[in-house]
Length: 482
Image (cartoon, rainbow, N blue to C red; front, side):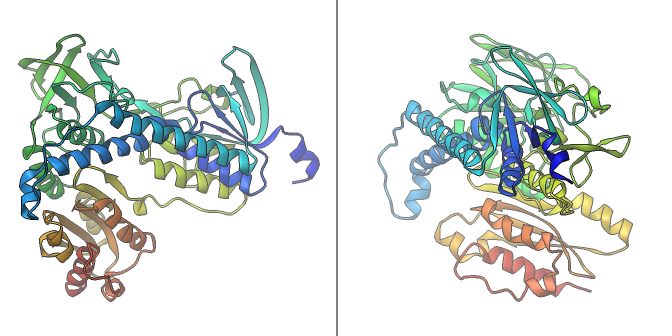
């Protein structure tokens, strides 16, 4: 491209949205010499930094310490007798807020240092290669760019019939500020958000009722992992978990009124009156005000269709110079997926052809202990085995056989490994146990490289560490190859 045609645009790249996906895309582009602008109407850092992964991990770290110190029976196993534990709710909340402020500042400075221009306002498309930015004052400016990346993210989903007031009935957006500790809180949804907050609230002395519309609690997790995890994270705590019931209506107030019906028949079950309700029923894409019609794009339930190079699609064909990354694409709604997609989009813009590999992207739930997974579920692996004509291998490795877990008196845990019994290729893994979120990375790397347990079984792991749980699984798997 000649300098003249490049100079005819205000920017080489405009990224709409400064969450994790937009941030990574803008930084990568600016680092590689593209004249880059990033548009953000809310806080820099998006959901992850301000209302998601970052503050929730701060709350989980603090409440996890409280749980540990209050677990007299566990401590007695080490011969330790601790005084009754005391905590200050406000200081725990302050820890989360300070962490958010620090990371948001760091992220903004990183973008500025890389040379990206930050445009404050709400961005939308104005036809091909044009972005309108409406500032808070109402002033609107239109910028041109050779390429545009949409990275507008997602918001919590509130099902019909549920009324929120931000104080007694709220989503994870409000929960992370930990403004108060309800004596009895109902959590609607038992996915990773519901589980993490149940962990926080029970550690801080709240009673929890968990309401799951699907027929089993933790429906998005591997069934075997869900079974062992629920035994500890739900049954072993002050949590009353109900599945197959739907919160037909939730009315804020003191108390909050929840009308429960059977999911299958819609027959009334009971009216619950609790102090607060956290709605943790998933997330919906932020795409309706983007003026996608100006470039002929139709969403699928609000999600923007993309290919594996992150190009936006219309009827299966790429729209020139338009890309989308992160939650708005609806692929794997995780911060690190968004960041990976941002990198892939920019590499393709730079002319380095690259596709995303979703199978190798791990996911984690930061409960105490943690849950993690990567690659295929057992059901999907069975389907693939049937379609491709290979035998699926499955082995289980237990934390109770691990010296480090036993030393920590934390030996309740399981790793399940899925692999191709002919080639030995690792297809996926699911872990529940101490530091599962860190352990999954090793398997994610093996999946990314499409490695076989044949080679992996010979890799030496440090003794005594939890990583030997993975080593044992690889060795067991290698022994079963056909």
